[in-house]
Length: 138
Image (cartoon, rainbow, N blue to C red; front, top):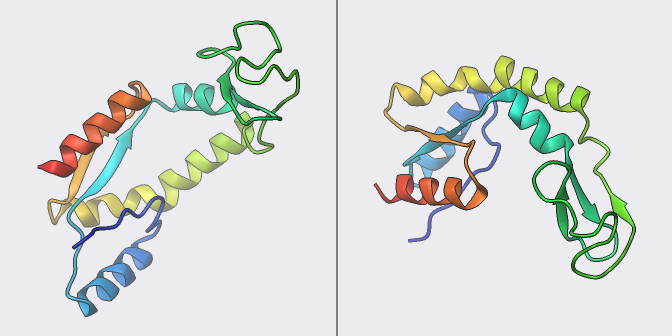
């Protein structure tokens, strides 16, 4: 029987309780809750520094992955790049504050049931994915 991954849900205790009821009605339950642990300043840098090629969608970053030639996409040669409008420091910090106020408080609800697995989210994407995979296999 295939499982499911809920990304960014539930965000509140009421949603967590509603999800538990819905799953229980179907004879199911949560197996794991993964908390990605990150340094907030580093997370702000990661998010605000990302940009993509407007033509092919190749991803880049101001600090970690710049195009080989300045302002020229490595994949298609385009010189047009875009950034998501909400990838700015104010928006990211507002979202982090909202997470701390509304979502983080549900962690004890799941901690009491032994479901929370904490994963270091500061590694490379492949490294974090491998740690999540290892956590889910336990």
